[in-house]
Image (cartoon, rainbow over all chains, first blue to last red; front, side, top):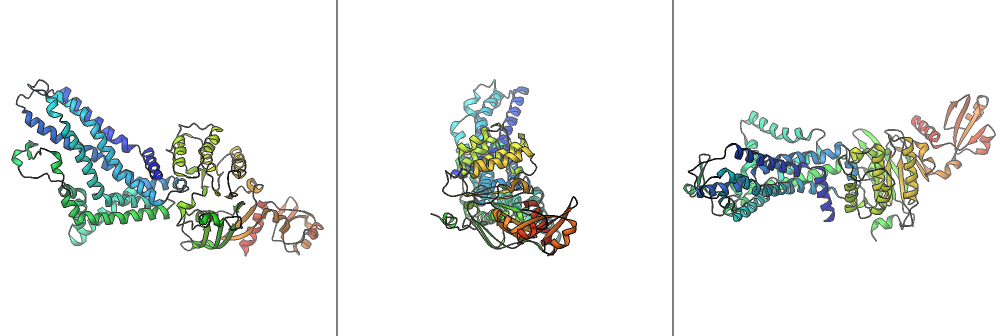
Amino acid sequence: MKTFYWLLRREFWEHRAIVIAPIITGVVILIGALTRWIIQPAQDPTVDPQRLADIALLLMSWFALPFFIVNGFVAIFYLMDSLYGERKDRSVLFWRSLPVSDTAVVTAKLTTGLVLAPLVAALVAALSLPVITFVFRGYFAGQHFSALPIMWNPAHFFQAMILWVYATAVCVLWFLPVAAWFLAVSAWAPKNPFLWGLVPPAALIAIERLLRGSSWVGDQLSDRLQGWVSLAFDTGTRGADQGVKFNGEHVHVPANLLDWIDPGPLLASPRLWVGIAVGLLFVFLAVQGRRYRTEA
Amino acid sequence: MNSANEASGAGGVPVVEARGLTKTYGTTRALDKINLSIGAGRIVGLIGPNGAGKTTTLKSILGLAPYEGELRVLGLNPYSERARLMQDVCFIADVAVMPRWLKVSDAIDFVSGIHPRFNRARADAFLSKTEIPRNARVKQLSKGMVTQLHLALVMAIEARLLVLDEPTLGLDIIYRKRFYDTLLNDYFSNEDSLEQARTIIVTTHQVEEIENILTDVIFIGHGRVVLDLPMDSIADRFTQLSISSERLAEARALGPIHEHESIGRSLLYFENVDRKRLAALGDVRTPGLADLFVAKLSGSAGA
């Protein structure tokens, strides 16, 4: 356990982007919010407090999305570089001179990229949200009501955070095969793990289209990218009429964000379990690669 | 106690035991059925030309590469039990392998956190004798400093086997000298805190540098062990004869393993030939490791 703790800390020493990228994301959003506030202090007399509360709730629940998207790119780069980079600079010889098993090292890197990185992103999002809400309240300055208590509902804030952690847990399970694939590529690629990681899937899609005119592989990959949303969340279309109009579409706003949480269909889906099995196979291959390919 | 401790106990069970160790890269045999036995407390020089199989041998011993044949290091299978083996073995494969982004203080924290035999006070004491700033990253250190840092980390590990592969490669002469001084003073003579003697295996191109500290020497050429014997028996077995050219034919009749010209005189190398007989022909002495190496390797090349 102590060894694992140090293995994780080591990853954060080397890959500071895991922490810096979400902070930059927060700062960019904050600057965006500030400039918007300064440029156009809105004076919309028709704004309805209930509608404002609904929008605030939706913004809260979706607030972590840009952080998670940025984290996705950071994690892909991190995983692809992790086992390749140490071979490239030959520091793998230093790391392997220490009494730590290759399984422990690969597990630590997988944990960092797949679990800790999104949790850090969620944490930075959670810290940014109050700041940005506070800034945004100025957007409604001059209203006949005070916007802040309507926009800032602590219960909703905590619901949002639980929602993010739930989304992270779902993504850990769902994206295990993707993360493990990048790790395995990182462990085995003779050069340029980015090409090795991305070209084979693209080539499979192209070959299938050429030979059979079908798109099974592409459909699988596309499902892997987004299939988890409809499986793990119940954003129900029921009562769409009670929703708010958001970018021209009616969006259902629940009283409690936790109503969206519905892991049943996900856990019952063979797509999840096949993915996990494939993921474990890639993890095994990554461990073998770390053992076998000590030189780049 | 565990099997590793029993294996290198006082009973003379070797620290490294190889039987028919073989390694093939494609069609080339880097190691061809090597037999080795290295006892506890020895300082062994593994000497051979580039591509002879030195590094391959060390990699096998350290569990860094798969191999064929039988190999036990401290009683363990190095490839499948590397993580456990590394509790008792430390190595410097190349001075350049410290990760560039690592901070000096973090490096100490890390090794201290994961290595059960790491003596932090020793690492600190070693580092305080250097100019290395604690908050610097490896990439900011000079090459000599990186070596010192790596040494500080490795020397502070109370390991039973230390493996050094070209440890002084690319270092200037002052650092090289200091490296071996440190090795002997801080590492090898520090047996009071250890129950068992430490063993060192070292490879280098600079044979002269390590000649005086070795207890045993192993020559490797073309994937085979050409010579494997204690340093103190070299004098019994090998003689270098320096003679003028008129007595050359007489000396050659005694079957030298190698000869070369040096400033008007011929140098002939003999194995298992009575030194008194040779002394009658010219000046005799015990050959240095470098000369002996050339003599043995050029002989075996023709074989």
